[in-house]
Amino acid sequence: MKRAPRIAVERSNPAAVSRALWKSLVAFNRKAVGPLRYSRKIVTVRGESGRLLGGLILESYLRESYVELLWLSAAVRGARVGSRLLQEGERLARERGSVLIHLNTYSFQAPRFYEKHGYRRFGSLAGSPAAGKRFFYVKALSGPTRATSRGQAPRQRAPRRPASLR
Image (cartoon, rainbow, N blue to C red; front, side, top):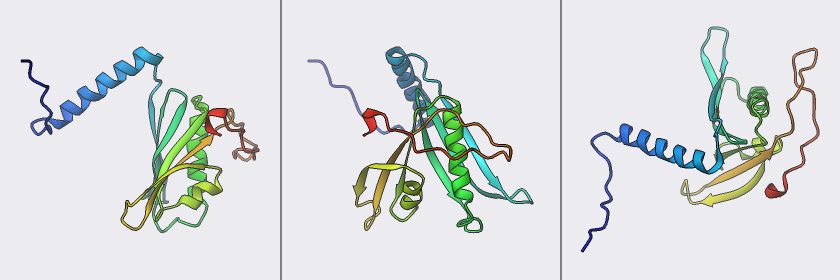
C-alpha cells in the first residue's frame, strides 16, 4: 500500500523552503496568466532631520496593487500626510497600469480614512482582535494622472468600478 504524503512544520530552514514555495507558485501563476509584472515600492515620510515618520508599502502584480502597510507616527497624524501618502501609492499603482488597488485594515485602525478616499468595503472578519473586526477594501483606479503646475495631481471624479467589483 502506498503511504500518504507527510505534512510537517518546517524547522530546519524555513526561509529556504518559503522561497521554494513562492518560486513554485509564481511559476504556476506565470504558466496560467503570463508575466506577473511584480513590483514592490516603499514610499516614506521623513522629517527635516531624516527621521522616519511613516510610510506605505505597495505591492503590484498583474493589473492590481495591494497596500501591504500604511503607517504614520502620532506626530504627523491628522495633518493630511496620510491622504498625500495614499494618493502617492495610488498614483504609482496607476502609473504601472493597475486597474484596482486593495488593502485590509482593523476596526481600531483607520477604516473611515479609506472610505473617505473612495475605498469600498467588500468583506470583513469578526473576532480578530477579540472585540474587533478586520475589513477588506478595494478601489477602482482611473488612468494615469497629470501633474498640475504646482506638482499636485488634479482632482478627478471617482472612477467607475469595473463590473466585477460592483
